[in-house]
Length: 294
Image 1 (cartoon, helix red, strand yellow):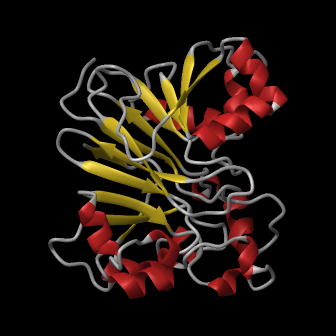
Image 2: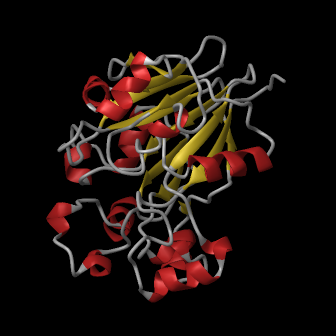
């Protein structure tokens, strides 16, 4: 069935390890193990084109649960026509193997990614064999140039280079542009000082790309969450820093939703003081299962 709008479904809003996170014995994850309704999957989007075709952003190991969520919301046309991968860290690419003979046994699935990610896939034996078997077809994008993931889907994707840990591959944000609105998906970045160019502030940067809805890196509320870790190992702008740059939302500002939430992040609790502070400023927390129309 075709639709009037392009439909975007949030299939996960957690950091790469998901929530609860393996190995975490803290209260934050203990309560999510007791109450499964609190659990969250790694960041991913499901896109449904105007022609009824379906496409995924990211390929996580929790793809089965994400497909179930998508199906429960009535939007999944099996199988998805394509996957678009922002980078090669855990949670964004590790589910690729599920497309192969050991699991779903698919063929001809388009995988859109950067030259860097494509090179890594071709050099990884368990994924290289999937190319040789015809399970996946790699399609390398040109940064800043829009492409249609499939003909007639009614939307384009544009990859924007974003600085982030590059030990495996480079990293991109994705602009998904329909006929009515556009959405920026940027779950990972090192810092705003590296991302922003030409002395633009966050809102000016989003307006320069004509963004209506932005899903941005909200991994950590502040660095006290990971005081036992070297922050340099896992660089992300804190939500506190981002809010200080944004200030209160004006009527003309685009929607901003914080996503890629670490298991320690108090924003996972809608009733936390931090969540209330963020919402009081006019910004939003990305919700798993939410649907947007472009």
